[in-house]
Length: 184
Image (tube, rainbow, N blue to C red; front, side):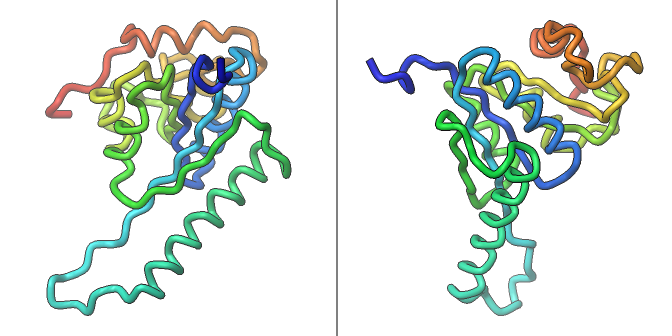
């Protein structure tokens, strides 16, 4: 049987931010530990234009797509090194990051995201994290700022900066840390 057919898949959403780089590093470590495949997703979307503005030319669209691929490649080199492991795949997709990551979470064992804010249950989390926490088809891990645990202590990021405990993420994935309500 094909290894790809039986290996769990961990999806990591990246945006080029320091928070998403930490999440990618955490996801790569977890994928290696669990012998899982790592799928790295960068979703980009064109800025909204007024209906009367000229439409984007095919050359502009191709340039933006190439820029997104280059951004993903630069993030991968910076976080994972120049050579990717055979079990790492990438996906650059056009569209809203929230929708793309929820779609990619279908069939995944885990979705890993970065958050610049240390307040998981507060209003500070962004729309991508909020949407994925409420709509993903798999458990979601949110890796917070360095030196902060999203559960509220200052003991390190969600996985434990020193590698002390990898069980912490299960608390968030299982819903022990409350997700924001619809009006938050």
